[in-house]
Length: 287
Image (cartoon, rainbow, N blue to C red):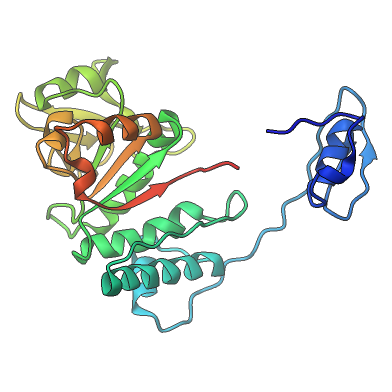
């Protein structure tokens, strides 16, 4: 890491970085690479501009892979999302044909649907039996919990009426219960006479009403069930919350973890999780 102040020769700093360094050193706002920067006061360091958002449009292509993804999400996609779905699927096919791994970086402003951009093709490949396990790695536990509810909603939307969910989801993070009979004590808290799930709420709630998942189970099985809609439920086979099952080879189709936990289970000699994984996703990488 090189440091800079007012005195060094600016020529040693790459040209594309100089405006940023100059803005920080001389306390100026930069609203673009061609903007010279306006002075700001000591009390106001930053400003914001309305973000230029791309409008979504109904998909009118003829790619059945995209059509199947839209059946899950039920929204009009951005071009960025459709391009990402097709790119990931192309890479998947190339990996299958050549045996060589492929990687992609999806970059877009906040609110452009990056999460759906990578989840859509993964859902399709998993439920078509084209790969075994996907591990999604989050920088923080709070973000993992936020995305867990979102993924459960998607999985529920794929479930045929009255049948088991087509994909299983699991979490692996610090402090998780080792066995099924510990799930109730570790992940549920008593609240107003009911035991509520602490990792995620049901998607059917809104800003004014929170619909919690409640616990129903025994020492060797459980079901989490939305208090407002009994059909929004997941058994211990559909939502894996104990470390023992994952350690013993029952890795779910989608495993959510943190960077620290990934390092831990990857280095454990008696854990075969890494061997079961076809795809890793690093979500929310900030450069």
